Amino acid sequence: QVQVVESGGGVVQPGGSLRLSCAASGFTFSRYGMQWVRQAPGKGLEWVAFIQYDGSNQYYADSVKGRFTISRDNSKNTLYLQVNSLRVDDTAVYYCAKGSASLENWGQGTLVTVSS
Amino acid sequence: EIVLTQSPGTLALSPGERATLSCRASQSVTSSLLAWYQQKPGQAPRLLIYAASSRATGIPDRFSGSGSGTDFTLTISRVEPEDFAVYYCQQYGTSPRTFGQGTKLEIK
Image 1 (cartoon, each protein chain N blue to C red):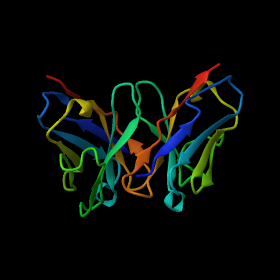
Image 2 (image 1 turned 90 degrees about the vertical axis):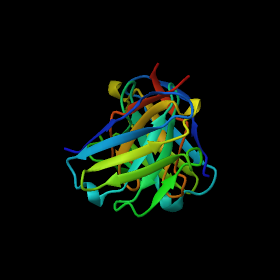
Image 3 (image 1 turned 120 degrees about the vertical axis):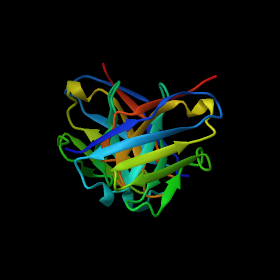
């Protein structure tokens, strides 16, 4: 069955960096676009970024543009999100999801906490 | 960016009642590329409806979506106990893709 599992979250100081990973299985990863969505504690969902199936195109929310980079390694069935220049308001659970359009399958998320 | 406004913020119903959730966009949603998701506490969201009215795999037929342009609706024909959750709409026709703020369906 389709599965995506996020990892790489943790506690980081403002201005710091992390690399989030999302391991995919149960489908042909290289044929699907992938996305990241985040959810601050007690808040709603916020779309973060999209990458095309072959990595040729990426799109970002304005709130993260220039600080976050989405990428993928189709040989490893893995999606990444490099998060730099972190701010307190980046604190959230980060979900990866399969799909170029609607978000068909979601992982359980990885928590990023930005705090001094 | 397209702003999605969901109403009501909270909907209190009894099991067996009909639920009607609204999602209004600040501008027309391209090709009705709008989805609905359900999220229960401590869980990841789950896709219910895509392209405004198509049910995702495994979603019961008591869930239905409708609408076009700027006005969209999610209807649950008869609410079951497991349906009490938060529901989000999302448009994915225009970048940046955006979510509504959510409607909480709670037990009356």
